[in-house]
Length: 182
Image (cartoon, rainbow, N blue to C red):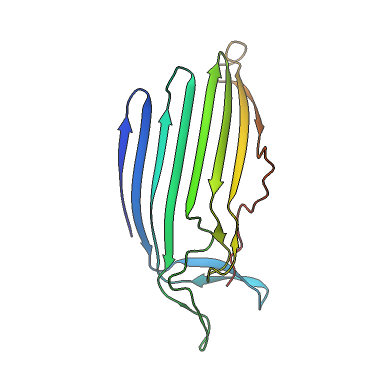
């Protein structure tokens, strides 16, 4: 079940959106690694509630210059403990959903100089828990990328371009996805 609402603001120089949401999943399935049996299993963790806000602002204060800023704040919570066996329960009630950062933010600036676009962007991802009981987390990270795009419309088919990207220019070491464990 999901409830979501938002507001959009638009002028010739600024586009902005702010959304809020509440989602409840009654039978959320999580794939997790079981260290005892050395395999991955699907577990119904029961009800999980998610709520948060997301926003994005794009602005072009002067001709050929564009800024885009975005953020998401996400709260998640397991609503009950997970029965593991007839005598063992995994204490997940009140814990944050695994592999779900509380905060993500991104920023991009782009400048168009004749037929060349120059871009620079950064992304922040908050820490994420690796286990269902929030006793192990991977740290937050920031990546920075840059790109240059040369439009070739004057030489070949319109819409054709040549682009060069440099990803993770700060050489940040991070885990892009997690294998959740009990």
